[in-house]
Image (cartoon, rainbow, N blue to C red; front, side, top):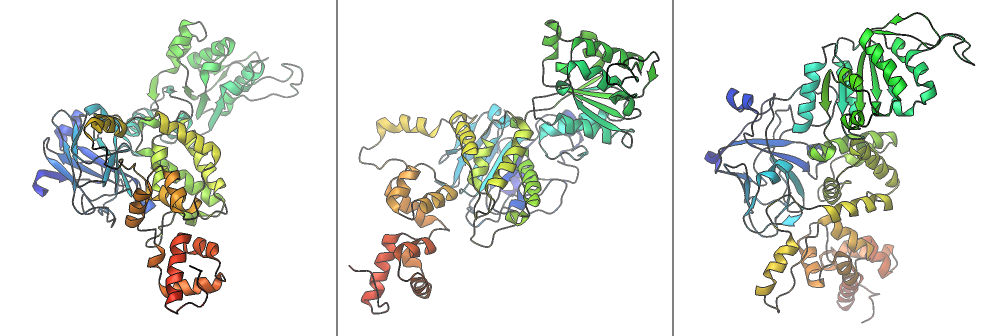
Length: 544
């Protein structure tokens, strides 16, 4: 197997040789860890330079993953992941074929995969979301970028962000205006700050203004200043934003909302390099680099007479398009952890992100990460930050992470609208296709249930099998199988006798209290105590 593929990750990115680096075409596969029980490993990746037609093994022991720009590598090392590898084969047409190691061990884009499946080039470009043994989440996607650019304080390592970073590097030292385009919340101001910090003006003023927040009656005075006595209440001279930003950078956000009068004055300032404060008679020379941003289709606004074409041409000395978050799925976990650390630090609870003790569940569960990855993020990075804040505040004082009603509604909408971008049919479609050949006596196929959902259902049902099975939408038999293979659920018969006796004494024989404390079913606990009573090792056993 080692002869069929080659893995390499250098300090500067993927080492693929000068010819392939210069071409900019897909030259291999990247496996990015979007979830690992050790949250510190999120964002680590393995890049394989594969010859089309050969298989890349994916298992507990290979490949090795490293954080970007780090040489410290390690395999998944999760005991619940099989040593026998799943095989990921890159096709000459840039499709991917995945062969699972066995049944029930792998799902792709939320659908269990028990046999070999081919995924189209389009699916690979969107990224394939692999879940291994309900423990690990990995994004498989094609590598298309050159060596990574400087980070400028921006968080993420996706190909889409690399394009933005390279654009920043190209334009930062030039004295040209920059137009940033992108959806609301995509991070346009952060990119503008990066351009300023990477430019020769970095030590000079940086000012930002939201043009949509300026009233038309005051916008001119705010931008260009005013003389003493220019209007009622102007008791002294006021320096506008252009004058205060002299020698530095002025960021104009939401420029699509400027009035036509303000547009005309802005155009003149950009053309002449000077401003005329309101009520003044003398022009003032200013040296300001303007970076503008919008989520408006300015060309359409020009066609509708709402935006001046000469101003658009002047502003877009260089244009950078900020991609929406949904096009950078591999950045979502890293950004989320970044925001969670900030919010947890504010409330003094940063320890929640530490690695869990052996056998314990991490504070942030895999199932929640998967649901967040399925969301379309119309509010982009700003929405993701708000979700992190909501999770932290809602979970204050609770042992486990709390998903409140508003976040649950958002995640449910994502679940109902998401469809995997692959050639594989949905699980329900495969069931329909197999219905005509199925034996009516066969039990129904069990739906996939992750570890977090299993524990949540059991706790909410007070460890009663019937209600928990109903909540999960599985049969009682299926639930018993899930409990049997779960590393975090034990049966009453598995509890050491000394622990059971101590609990019985502490709870005064109260079966409900014992069930909650030991986290086992009341019925199983009753049977175990009766057994101890019949053997004489327990004086007050439950009656038969």
